[in-house]
Length: 146
Image (tube, rainbow, N blue to C red; front, side):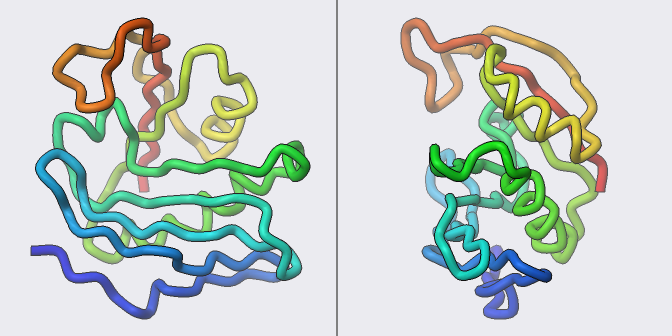
C-alpha cells in the first residue's frame, strides 16, 4: 500500500512553489496522486499532479498532469513544475514516467520534449481506458526516464 509523505506537501525552488491541494488514495482504476497548486512569486499560475505507480490506464492518462492558467502561459511554468515533481516519483523507486497530451496540443508536447520525454506513439485511445469518450482525440504518448 502506498503511503503519502508530508515532506512532499511543499516543493520549492528559486521562485516557484508547489503547494499541496490534495493527496488522493488509489481508486478502482486511478493511482494514488499528489495534487498541487503552482505558485510563482506566491501568485497562483496553475496546477499539477503526479500519480504514483503503474496500471493500464496510466499509459494513456500519464503520470503527470498539468494545467497553466491562460494568462500565465508561455513562460515555461509547466516544464519547471514538472521538474519539481520528479523527485516525488523517484522516492518510491519509479524509474520512468508516461506523460501524454492530445495530438494537437503543441505547447504541451513541447513541454514534454523539453523535459526529455521520448515519443513512443501517437494513438487512438482504447475503449477500455477509463476516460474514453466518443470522439476523444488521438494522444501523444511519451516516456520520460528518471
